[in-house]
Image 1 (cartoon, rainbow, N blue to C red):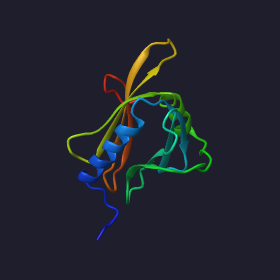
Image 2: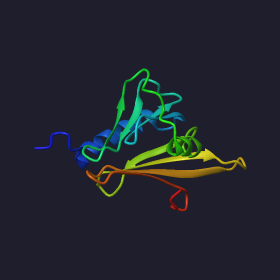
Image 3: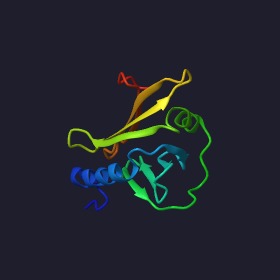
Length: 141
């Protein structure tokens, strides 16, 4: 029996909490712990961080209280997420199609000072978790 399996019902409850607490915050920091785990810190809601685990055995998202997560893993993924996601303004958090997929909508200012809407798709499917960043045309960045 897999007690850590996240169900669609569990995810709807988690996303409801996320929407209530982190919507309309800026992503103030992105911390990559290892090849599976990512933390997002927020500008206004500082009580907890969004923990995204893409561990193939037990993928999940949750708000957790942690003062100082480990240092950021240096690499292309870290550079990319800091460039594309950091300082984004969270517009919405929702589940897609009553499945274990979370969609985070955010806006950011590009290098020409235009506002762009972006999306983070987090697929929490065991053995095949995924983290995808899309632009407003749904093109994978």
